[in-house]
Image 1 (spheres, rainbow, N blue to C red):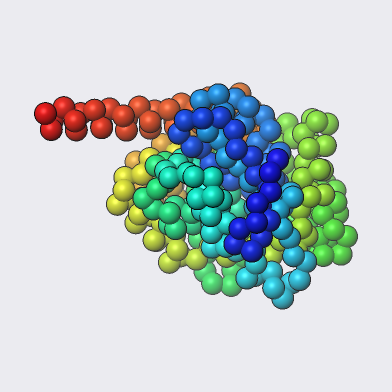
Image 2: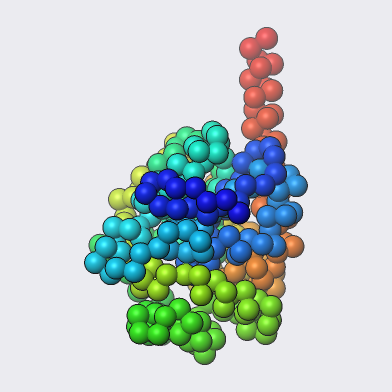
Length: 297
């Protein structure tokens, strides 16, 4: 996979297929390999672009806690990806973001690149903002907070494989499908090894003002939005309520036999849901252009 230097960082990326562009953004403790079961299928129908976001995979990392908040934030990640798309000659595109990091990065990218974003998919997430100084995992309740604080401490003291072992023990966001699959566990182990512990210990902040700006642009542009959830994930009702409050035209879909990591746990239904959503958007857009041309005649 090629690496390009943009925005002061090296970005490892993949660019496959032809047609309308579909951008895939992975979650924390992941990289391009999170979409290994999806890119071959989706690139039959679209031009698919994915990259290792900073701190992950083969893209640039820093391990300085003092510099981490400025380096690991959603504004910088969105800038990286926007510049990558410009470098690759992409004008308009659809974007999918996985979970909190990927979904938040996708939202920040929409805010930055509006109206170039033609549709957005939130996988296992929606737009989740929080008060200043409040880390996102504080929304998980006492048990979830305790687990994340322990994992952050382990990232600092033992590195990311300490986090990996703790996730197996605590089952934080890992369904039985993940825990019972040696292949998926091996994949997660590799992605943990390729993640900066400093990135994991410094979750970016997503403020309320930024969310209001993103939602306003979605409403203004009537941007197609889909939220995909796993049937075995937690807090799905809260995500559905939040998504519909933000934008009442949000399409909600629940995939069976999977938890938080839809693309890995149930790639078949994930691939079909994503291709149907994007394909439907393209068809409606084409019909709209055709109808406008007919009216002009």
